[in-house]
Length: 71
Image (cartoon, rainbow, N blue to C red; front, side, top):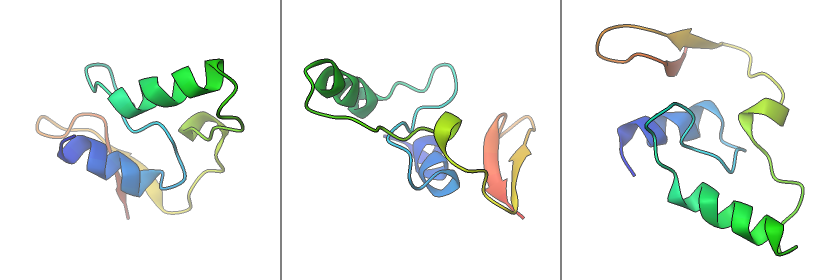
């Protein structure tokens, strides 16, 4: 899916959603949402409902706008 999605996975390892920023298409997330609509998935974790990770910080710059990195 691309390095941005891989970085998102490391920033939020428990999240079912990896495409966190606009333009990051996440087909797996769409499939999970379809499973949820069909009552085949529940209690889905996303960065919005996960506990904050100590040491994680937002890194903004011209080459990595919006990326999340550990300190």
